[in-house]
Length: 330
Image (cartoon, rainbow, N blue to C red; front, side):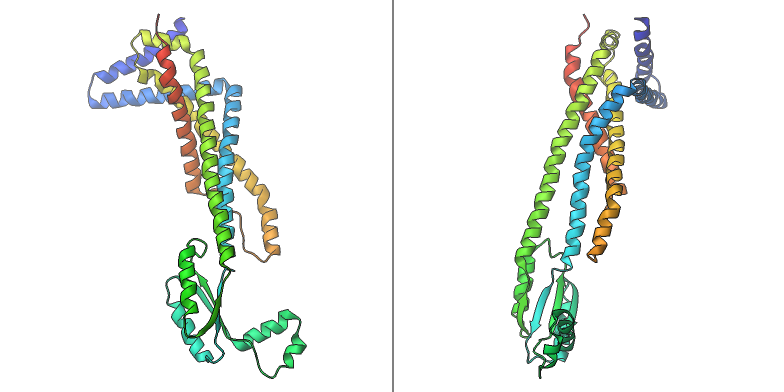
């Protein structure tokens, strides 16, 4: 029993030092209290490395699932951005409009801030492409007149994000005097938007569900730790330790559990993405696409570690808040 009471009494002396002395002494004492709680909690995790590793791996799998779905949506958004390049508005110019006037009309479209790119295809270019890809090259040569119109291909900015603005833009083009008719697959845009919205909401719901699981697992781990150190906590209360003083090492234990779980989850997600990187990019090259897998960036990595650490601390605080009320010195 002497060994159990030694550590709380030493820490209680530091706490007494905080209540007296100048501001610098209080600051140093406060720093020493937190440093001791931080590293002693880490030492306890290392001492029970097997059970700690089991808990951290379980939490890391849950966190990596949420992170993995986040990365999946980020890659889908990149893919949607690549698909957006094929989501062009084709403006078929009236046959009586000259190429000079069509070029002026294209220049006026380029000045629109909602337009990303404009490409004019002349009648000769359209006929050459038709001969090359249609397989009717000899039949086309027999024609006395080029029947194909001048076409202006327009790529709007963020066309997969604002369907209403896209519909208004398409309507404006259709009313232009130079345009015979404008063509675009609006149904395709709606489908892609719906898929991306479902994916985003799915990631949010999955993250909330897994985050709740992380809270409960951390809380149960700290509850077991509190049960093992029950005598130590009771003695600390007997010598006058405050709840904040008793909470501190357990909260730091929750922090370490959450932090190491976040680090492990980052390695799991990164390893999976590295395994998938080569075959996915090989498949992308077969379709002449510049798709590259997106990894967790620096900001996302910091957010992952911060969220997992905060979940560990919050889970610890929840169980301490309720369990310490039941531990009363007899």
